[in-house]
Length: 95
Image (tube, rainbow, N blue to C red):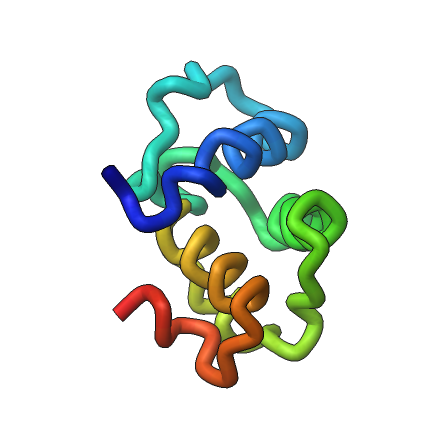
């Protein structure tokens, strides 16, 4: 089981709100790429970050560089988990 399994389902629900393509939510996993598989552009990413902050009660505004570097759903989940844990390094949990 994934380290971020508890975050995956609610995050996937948020993803389905911002993407403009039809994707089976069950097909979205931690290795799903944000840009290539989900076709999330920078504007949609801003929306996804905002929804994630609201849903997971985190503040990601200080992590702009980490957000710009997100490649996969797993990267996004690691960033959210890190923000929830209050970690200084937003990618520390992903390592």
